[in-house]
Image 1 (spheres, rainbow, N blue to C red):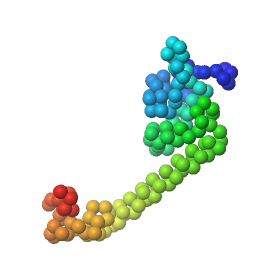
Image 2: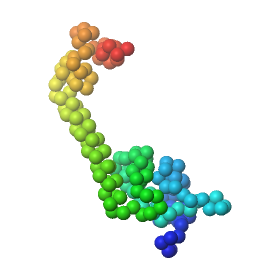
Image 3: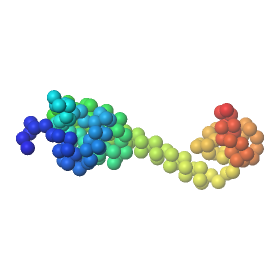
Image 4: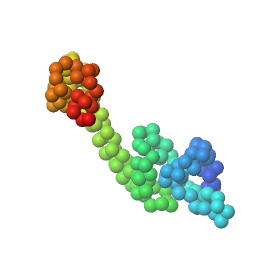
Length: 155
């Protein structure tokens, strides 16, 4: 295959190891953008092999398809992304993952505090009773006696 040839949908599917229907799915999500022939058949650029491969890897890393499509809009369409393009994309994804990791770590810390506190009143629980708002509704296990929404005065 010469470098300037376009790929059929079947060729792109074979090169990326996915089904033809998956190529159409990624097209619908804005990951790839086929060129239409006069006969309305899809033709794909060779760079779309890397775009789909990137999408498959990024999904495994936990990125959503809208996030992936957003990152893939950054390099110029129609050329294979360069190492500099991938470095920029990687940096943006790394920042998202670091924010997500920090959020998960805070959740783990809160969870450890909640399990470790052992109080039935949940007075210290930052997850379910911030600032001991349930105490305003009386003593006892307010979350068992009434719904969490009522106990926190959110109804």
